[in-house]
Length: 84
Image 1 (cartoon, rainbow, N blue to C red):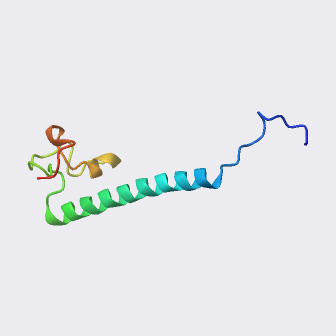
Image 2 (tube, rainbow, N blue to C red; image 1 turned 60 degrees about the vertical axis):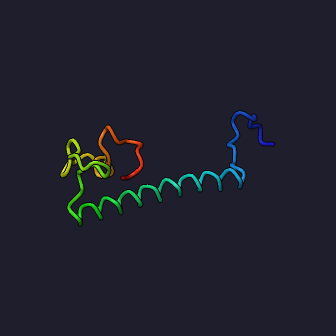
Image 3 (cartoon, helix red, strand yellow; image 1 turned 120 degrees about the vertical axis):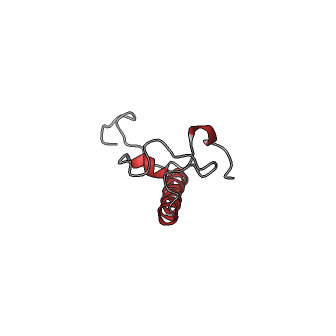
């Protein structure tokens, strides 16, 4: 060896680890794209900025400049509730 101790060597991920990590990232990307598509549909039909369960106007929406606000689809009461 070149005199590099075990602690100094870079660990190369095993293919199964890399595939698992890529799968997680892909799932996250798909979830963001799905949320963006739903937001665009809501903008098109005029319901963006309203709770998808009860229709209550969401705080700060529409037109909120916060990136995450675009993906908010439910009020505080209905977060985690099945769409009605």
